[in-house]
Length: 108
Picture 1 (cartoon, rainbow, N blue to C red):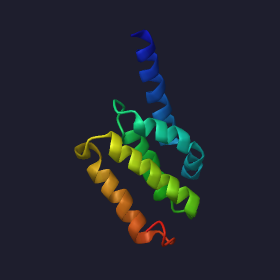
Picture 2 (spheres, rainbow, N blue to C red; picture 1 turned 90 degrees about the vertical axis):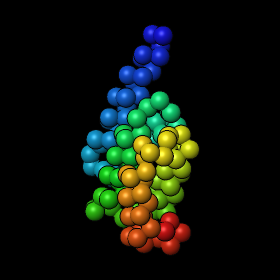
Picture 3 (spheres, rainbow, N blue to C red; picture 1 turned 60 degrees about the horizontal axis):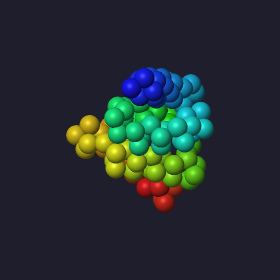
């Protein structure tokens, strides 16, 4: 029970860390953590969604194909791990933005 509490606290603090990372372009260095957080079914997915939103909507960075694919992979993990009602609106905004404004045709 004690290790579960430590795991819970640690993942929450890591989620908070990655969601607030400055500048947002640095978030792309933490995709491994984002995937782990997104696959943790009992953890609120808003940390990951906030980090992805900040990365995708960051005006100063142009997203490479590799980064875009990692965003999509992380989105897929969230979709498979969390109830649709919880993620629908933020996921819709994120994917719509990618489909509309992403320069790379493969990512659109």
